Image (cartoon, rainbow, N blue to C red; front, top):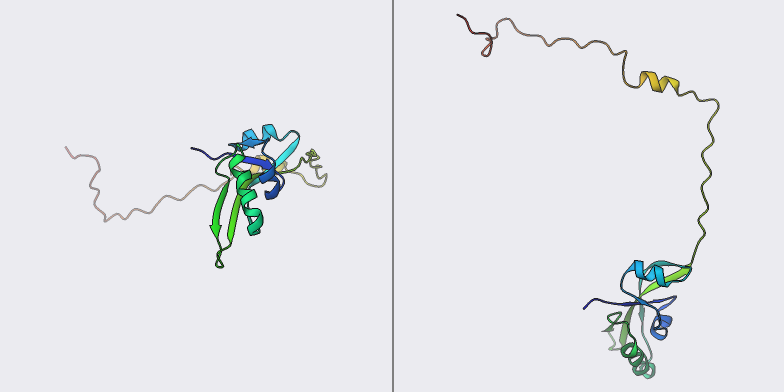
Amino acid sequence: MSHIYPIATSAKAALSETAKIARTRYEAEALAEGQAIAALETEWLTPATDDLSEILEQVTASPAHGFVQNYEDAQGNTVLAITYWKVTKAKKAKPKPPPKPDPDSDHTDDLYFRSGRNKKPKKRKYVDPNQLDMFGEKES
């Protein structure tokens, strides 16, 4: 069984709003209706003991499942880890202006001399005349 997470702005809103749920980020972005999905957020809440039963009822009534985990702190209080798709306002992307060419720079030399056309010829490796040639020509 996979986890299904609610789409909300905060952990408390994730507990109460159960209309929008998504399994993947792509589903969440499609259901966000003009808002952007920031991340899969996990918030930790320590509810009061009076509110705990009400919160757990909301969790069980929610169509999303696997988004709330129960833990205990050192004092024995219940701590809830609530995971949800965090919604933010959609930012309109501004197109970046094209870079302005620098009139003082001339890059034509890079085009002609980058490949190394005027390299010096390599020197041949010195071969010692006293060394035996084991793979040379056969003598008849």
